[in-house]
Image 1 (cartoon, rainbow, N blue to C red):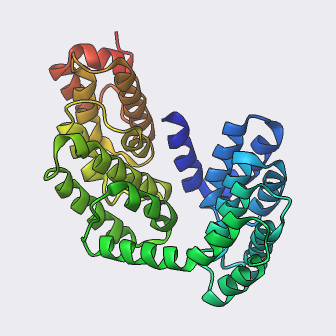
Image 2 (cartoon, rainbow, N blue to C red):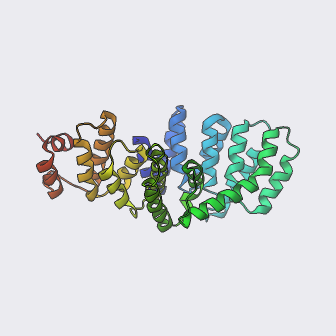
Image 3 (cartoon, rainbow, N blue to C red):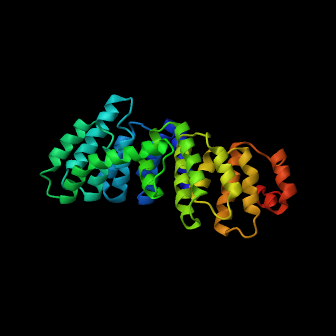
Length: 314
């Protein structure tokens, strides 16, 4: 959860964080850390991402898959040479038969937003490829893209699918470029949907809502903070980590009392309480809320033990 929040904060910081991210990638051999760096670079649209992604593609494995996704974010860069370099690197990866299948498929999927003429040439080139999975994926990709586009458009209009997991996969590719107000309306629609499904299926929809909140946090938007606050207020147990990761980045003072109430619940899971405390302290630090603040005094009156633990006050 801390790593997800850090990725979102770095994405919000933008170009000022790029040099440090590049150094972090170069100085580590930990695959998880390298994937996290690539995810933070993904939304930056910065040309410096290309050199890191090129090295990651040569590394192979999950790191290379993350690199292909990071390059996708550069394809619509206003900096023409950066977009061209990213496109060339992805196309070269797709067509390189020496590259692992999963990496080639990830590169092919990253090209989904390219004009049909570009995708058609890639499909044509892959028809002679010895890997039947690549050939099938290339032939199928246009249909899959059309279906995903239709599903996303329906969701934008409030028409949700029967299976939230499918929409979550589509959201991962499209939420970054969707209007903020549209994402807010989708979050509201999903919350209503949660209230109509059987309890056993509610967690699936909640995970989708959390993923959209994370997408908003990656863009530094507070447009749906009210829903984060109310989700904590209404929670009967632990929420998906994506909710607290988003609160880390965009939560405001109004979220502190609900977080304190959640922390004070005697039946709360210890790990959930730790995550709640981390989100509370991150917001308080960012919003410059001290122990003398009226909110902290209200919390101390209602939940004195929680206030002592959350603020460190004796």
